[in-house]
Length: 112
Image 1 (cartoon, rainbow, N blue to C red):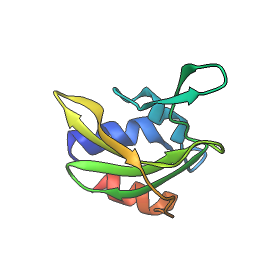
Image 2 (cartoon, rainbow, N blue to C red; image 1 turned 60 degrees about the horizontal axis):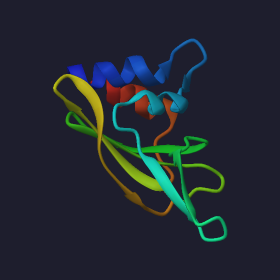
Image 3 (cartoon, helix red, strand yellow; image 1 turned 180 degrees about the horizontal axis):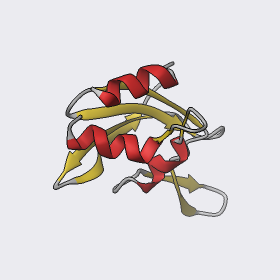
Image 4 (cartoon, rainbow, N blue to C red; image 1 turned 180 degrees about the vertical axis):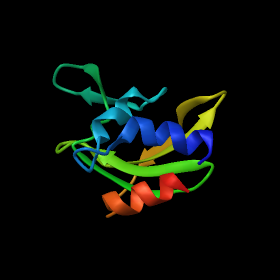
């Protein structure tokens, strides 16, 4: 297991409950903060990309890609890479929601 996958495993995998702790994505450096403009109030508000609806769609030795978003947020495709030894979001963009990997597939891929 390389350092990138080891850090992801420690952050995301709850072995006892056999579940992915998607809420821990918010601990990754540079986690997306979305802005919303309210025309009535003529103001902009900010909130972090939610992980209520989250799915990991790809994992390799260099990056992880996931779709994340809240019930009222547009889903975003998020790429996480290891930069200077720290898990970091390197890109994110609006995207349609995609079904991803299940628990066993994620654990297997992170264990390679």
